[in-house]
Length: 293
Image 1 (cartoon, rainbow, N blue to C red):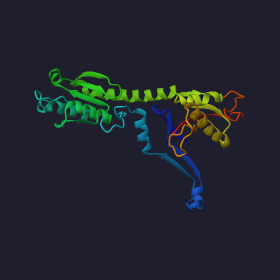
Image 2 (cartoon, helix red, strand yellow):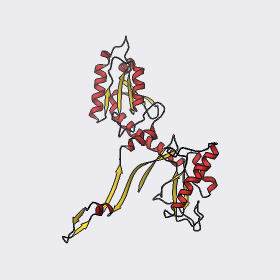
Image 3 (tube, helix red, strand yellow):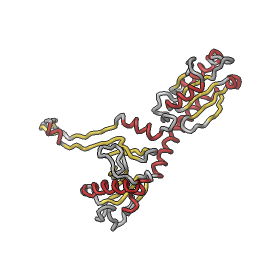
Image 4 (cartoon, rainbow, N blue to C red):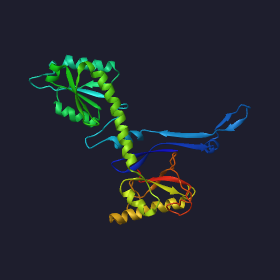
């Protein structure tokens, strides 16, 4: 089985995780045995499960923007950062007690947060720094906020800015982090769904790849690897032709050729008599194609 992620900015899929039923091949090869309930020696059956640091890179590519990282709150090392707006007229000492109280209230709520009290950088520099780092919420504290016993929240994901009373701050941020988590997932899911199309005729296949789409097509089955290779070669040929390009390096990591990504567990209805998009043989399932890393 495989879990395929979709990278919106590139219109490509990338494998996020896999599992494999290895059978007894490696058990026999390396003489790995166990004793069964009858006391007899048996060769082990093995599986392989892979979920690696690649998923971090996938997360960055799916959610990041031109400013930098956009981190989901549940995995962000810092969920919120407090930035006092200091100046010659309003030095850091004026904010220390107020910001320290905010920091403690958030930590008591198990919110991973930090007070950026570095004196060598101005507030604007800090804003850009923490936006690039992808911290979900920035908490700005200026002189007026001290007077009004409030702060300004800036949400990295949406750019939303809201003024919140300091007494309700911890609960508000906890709720806002949940909203951001759900919003980021919903946005990525919607973008993927908007770029997942069904195609039943070859003439529509490559044009949809060029639109950065994932393509579901009727397929004659995994045993027909020769037709899978045909799709790969034909899609590369037609894509290059449509772009006016002569060819591509065989070593490229970003080929324009399509490849099978998976046979989805949730299969759309396959009407009787449906033909495979490549071979014209009777289709047995829907398969997902796309360009990939």
